[in-house]
Structure formats: C-alpha cells, structure tokens
Image: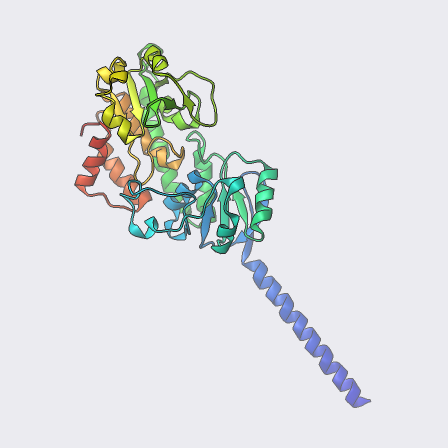
Length: 353
C-alpha cells in the first residue's frame, strides 16, 4: 500500500508540475501581447514588440515607411524607377505584396508573416472584421484620417505608437503643424477676390482632375487657393473638356504628369488658358512620393510649403523651401539630398531658387 501511495503521490506531483509549467507558458505568451483599440474602436491583441508591418492602403504604407522603414516588409503596389530615384536601394527592393483592401492578395500577406497589418480610411467595422477573418491570426488595425491633412496627426501618432516610434511620429506631427501655421497665418487674410484660381491636371491629357472638396486637392484649399473644378465630389478623378478648362481659365495649373508638363506650353489646345499664357504651370515632385496627392497623406506635408510658394511666391519669399526639403527628406525619407539633387527637385517643378 505504501508503494502505491508513493506512486500516486509522484504522479500527482508530475501532473501538478506540468500544469504549473503550462500555466507559466500561457502567462508568458499573454505577456508578449497587448490590447490595442484601433481607430474604428475595435479591440485587437497585438505583439508588444512589433518588428514586421505591412499595409493594404497606399497612404498608410507611406506613413509606415516614414516612421519605421526597417519594419516595413513590402509595398502594397508597384513603384516606378522615377519614384525610387530618391530612395535607398534597400527599400526599393522590398517585395510588392498587393494591397487594395477587400481585393488584397491575402495569401502573400500571410506568407510574409507580419506582426501587424494596417488598413486605411474608408472601411466599415464589418469590412475590417471580414478582412481580419481572411488574415487569420495576424492582427489587423484600422487607421482613420490617413488621407486627410486636416486630421492626419492622430493617425501618425497612432501608427507611431504601434511600431514603437513615438518620437519620430511626434517630430512628423510637429513639422506638419509648423507648416500649417506658417502658411495659414499668411493666407487667411487674402480676400476672396484676390485668391489664385487653380486647376489640377492629373494625367497625360491634362483633362482628368479632382474636384474641390476632394482629399486629392486639399493643398489648394489649405494654401489659400480656389480649386476651379467646381464639379460634384467623387472618390476618384473626373474627366473634363478643354472647353470647360477655358471657361474656368485658371491663374495657375498644377500638374502631376511629366509628359503633359513638357508639352503644355507648345500644345495648341492649351494656348488660350491663362495659366499657360502666363507661364504658371507647375509640376508636382513625386520621388520618393508625390508632394501633392497620389496618395493624399503624410507625403503631402512637404507639399504645403511648395504649394504655398507656387500660389503666392511674394507672400512666401522668406520661406526656405530648400532647407525644408532637405530636413524632410533626411528625417522622414532617410535620404540625404545633394545640392544638385535638391536644386533639381525644386527647379524641375517650375519654381525658381
């Protein structure tokens, strides 16, 4: 009987020891996670130490690069050689994962084993929950305001917290607030009758634009201009006729397509537009990211001083765009521009040094 009792006691001790080890393991695993409330109010468990991140949304991907480039595991869409011109090669060669929210390449995202995946504005809670189900155990966090300069600071701060770059996020928010303050303090007093009338040409024909009120043309409003494309706001671009552009007769044209910019002054179709006649057509810099839109987001923060100088060069003659560009690229694009590169970016856009 004593032997049986001893055996039973030993077995119980083994079981208790195993349970203690299992409980300890559970606590350790739980200790590696923390609960985050995303910007749609969803409670999500994420790793405390996040080292691999990806995004379904272009604007959020750009922010991830600006805040934590070494944690970004891939781009959500293809990048051109032109876009890669002012980007370190180690980031140029990141794989393309294939974003697009609902129609994203989920298999590729899962195979890359990210710690966290982000999705940007424009999704409902049900949409995000469906996307989370497709991602399985990989946590998905929603970001709101990532495409809107009027409330982008919260999204920058949120992402900075997740990726462990609160200081970098704070610096980007400070740069943004400084630019907004400097520009709006001067443009707020411009009478409506004296505001520059601006047309934004998006494509190689010059006849695709984004209307007033669109997030894609926010910089015109922020910098005290009037977007002449007074047509119903849509999510995408709208096509217009040259006759309509002639009726609007803008003072300034901002364009994103290099081919159109190179040809607009010699194209007979555009010769009677005031901006063309006055040599007031400007090309948006777009390496490593577009300064004006595409996507609208944190990359357009540097577009605030650029657009201000395009619209009102006399009012902003004391604003040193070269120094601001150098600072922004060094701090948030991790690229130190040479003097020649810096001069080329600014003069190629149509601005004078």
